[in-house]
Image (cartoon, rainbow, N blue to C red; front, side, top):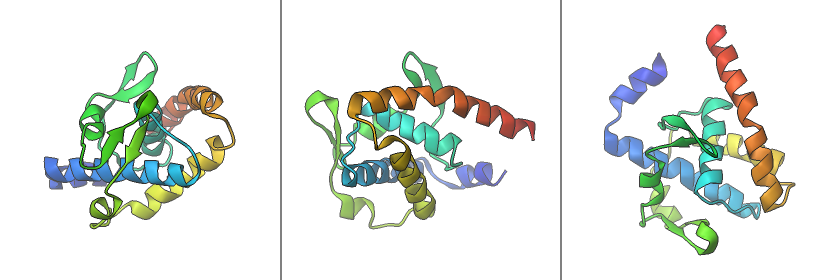
Length: 150
């Protein structure tokens, strides 16, 4: 109920800014650990943060061919003030100071979740990591179902 009330209280602009911050944290922490992301793997991290770590990402994930993907995620990635797509469509985070000038109220929780995902998937190479991340989707769905049952 709190998340729904919080969602009502935030404007569309505030929600978009928080989405930018969450993606920025994912990319920054992963970069520190020599992990790169494209759109799909970034979306998978966001999905796991949302569903496993109960971090409100403000995305509505829909089932896609390659796993859950939020339809409005492309708006976040298209923000050229903070993100650029490089060779092989890898995302790069820019203007960190400006994006984190205002602290996200869930920043500590987000950072902890991303660090746990890095610890889980960081030991694999790029290709194997993508496969391992996809294997977690059924587990995440079961977790979501079990939370609704309790």
